[in-house]
Image (tube, rainbow, N blue to C red; front, side, top):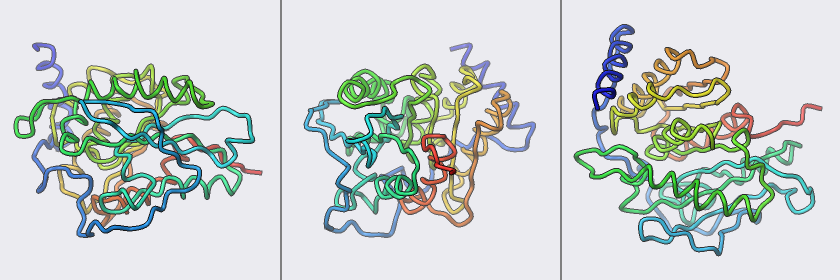
Length: 299
């Protein structure tokens, strides 16, 4: 514990030198699946034919977790192996019929890239746990919202889901070809995932991360510098609560103070963008290409 206090003290010094402080103030509303005025409506499925829901039963926290798998359009005929991206909040990734307030359109985005000749990854989406979502996506306890289960959830991805995917699909299972991603609390979990397990994940897609949830995220990050080759893509909307916006800025400052290479650190702040699937959907194409999860055909 003394070590944590000492490390956080140096983080505080870093922020004071650049004129900002870690923002741990709670946004106006606790993180939901998305903050949106859009109503949830019954709609037809928009899932592409190359997205499947696994029949295998995965259980975490006493709940069955639906696992979605997007396969590249050429998967059945190519004989190739593919990089894999593990995304949180599977309900919101592929299908408007299961989403909270619109979907990310992961399948449509990747299918368009593939149609232009790009090699695209396998994407695995894991459903969140409903009322337990906030707790299971944070590795640090927040007094207001209860105990943390994020470490156990990350282990569930690594020890249960990933081995199944690597066994049943033609993946490139090594760290160089494995990425993690998510938004909001899922962004917090994904940042934690790459910092805690850089031996498993070398790339992270981190949209609107809930760094406000616990200042321990800065302590943990400073105490565990990432390998220089690891790539991190952060995106936040300037129309979001200041806790979200400042959190990304502060984390980028910390990573730069650790001398993480600028070429492997991307920080995007989009004017007017809000905390919702529409914003995250708009960032997906660029993020996947920058993270080198998509191999473009430049011929």
